[in-house]
Amino acid sequence: HLEGSGGGSVQVGGSLRLSCAASEPTFSSYSMAWFRQAPGSEREFVASITWNGETTDYADAVRGRFTISRDNTENTASLQMDSLKPEDTALYYCAAKYFRASYIAGEYDYWGPGTQVTVSS
Image 1 (tube, helix red, strand yellow):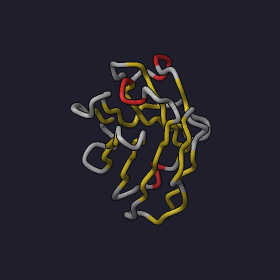
Image 2: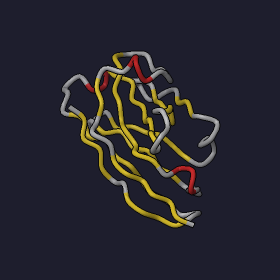
Image 3: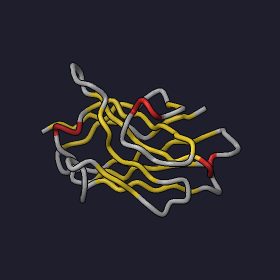
Image 4: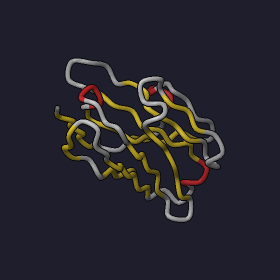
């Protein structure tokens, strides 16, 4: 079970931090990722972090602005979003995949319910 939080509304250039809490006791065995879906668009990869936190990956659209992290002692993953743009507006989902990370949504085992991020100019 994944529970996301931290969404909201912000102006262009602002920051938000999303969090994802897992109730799964083997959280440290799962790679974590964030995906997003804007109205009328398909769900797209945003960022991922491996089970041990050693490797991260980002979509080109967010690289250098977003930072994914995790705390295996707290069973949480976070997405720090800086320099937000209107095109970042979407419903953001955290997801968990056993062991290896991926940018493919269909490969993830568990999904959070989504949290809305709105960036206005």
